[in-house]
Image (cartoon, rainbow, N blue to C red; front, side):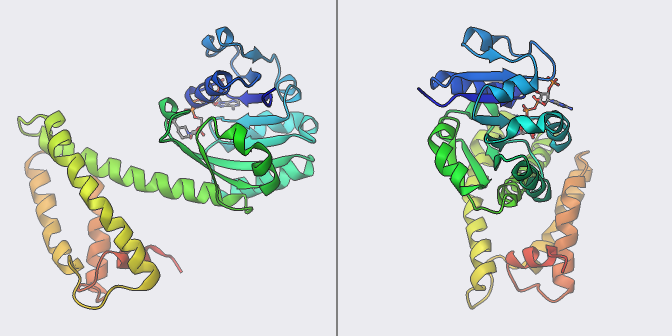
Amino acid sequence: MKTPVTVLGLGAMGTALARTFLAAGHPTTVWNRTPGRSPELDDLGAARAKTVGDAIAASPLIVACLLDDTSVRSTLEPVAPELARRTLVNLTNGTPEQARRAADWAAQQGAQYLDGGIMAVPVMIGGPAAFILYSGSPEAFEQYRDDLAVLAKPTYVGSDAGLAALQDLALLSAMYGMFGGAAHALAMVSSEKLSPTAFAADLLVPWLTAMLGTVSGMANDLEYGAAPGPAGSNLAMQSAAFPNFFDASEAQGVDPMLLVPIRSLLERAVAEGHGDEDLAVLVRLLAKD
Ligand code: FVH
């Protein structure tokens, strides 16, 4: 028999997780703060627990996917003794500090703990592009790796419970930077009678795809130092072009607010003498100590 699992939280993501466990044949118990959410899970065979305590008692593997750390704490703390000898996998977005605190708290209850960062949107769960970062108990990861693999490719990043959240937030930061840039680009194109759809398909996506190679170059320069010789796209040149972005945006009636931080960072890099260097300098300038 497949491992029985409990899913706490039936928002968009929790529902996708529960549906995927059910499709893979796992006896699946679900609980949600607001009863009756995602009724389609009942037809798929989910057992709906009336209380969170009943939900935890039903399975050795508990997957929590709630809004935030506060909701996880307020849900689990009243039923803490129920967690003894179970494994809690917390896929709720949170900080490394929250993950470490949750790991300590779970250990005090006699539970194994894995913190997870879901690198997927709900429709991707169970599909080939989805992966989930896990950190925390290596024994729990080994024990449940195959069960968790039905959701997304499981990627274990270390026994320090905070490491999945750290890298999850880093990846999401990069994603939001890209979304912000794409939003600005689409606003500029939309200020003329141009098709955003055609712009995205023919120009924006190919351009961003080509530029992805630059990211590996930045990381390489950061870790090993820049290759000798002039930077291919030096920061002084990049900074000199930035007023054009602002002037053109204002002229098209587009707020350049999303470009302000990168412009000021470039200007600072040049002012501090890094004008002839490449983008990895920006990473160093972001470090606060
Ligand atoms: N959806 C996504 O694209 C992203 C993908 C990456 C991972 N995130 C994180 O996953 C967590 C859950 O996200 P979600 O998409 O399921 O979120 P919602 O659809 O808004 O559902 C929220 C659930 O949380 C329950 N909840 C909220 N507050 C409380 C509380 N105080 N006590 C108990 N449960 C609470 C809510 O219940 P209800 O409102 O129906 O009663 C939903 O079940 C999240 O950390 C993402 O960052 C998703």
